[in-house]
Image 1 (cartoon, rainbow, N blue to C red):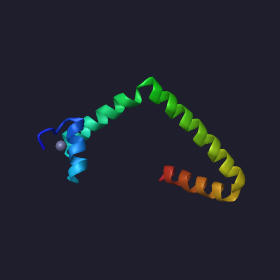
Image 2 (cartoon, helix red, strand yellow):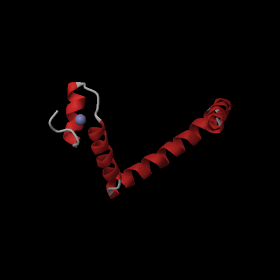
Image 3 (cartoon, rainbow, N blue to C red):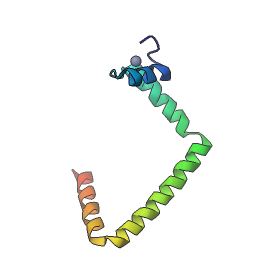
Image 4 (spheres, helix red, strand yellow):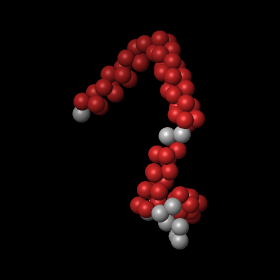
Amino acid sequence: MSRCGTTQGYDDHKAAGTAYCQPCRDAAAAYMREYRQRPEVQRRERINRGARERALTRLAAEHPGRFAALLTEELAKEDA
Ligand SMILES: [Zn+2]
């Protein structure tokens, strides 16, 4: 892999089905960090978070017992 340490190298690993090397992981992580800073991406993520939160609220209202049990389980993991 001649392009290791670049996002192209990361894509090469994916296409070849080979394990990602650390320089390629680092390059992909740096790209994604910068990508998530873009205003249009932040706006879309904010919209998605709001929609997800509203959907969870509705789901909890439809299945209060199950939601309470799942919430208790997840909170217990935080204490572990
Ligand atoms: Zn690589």
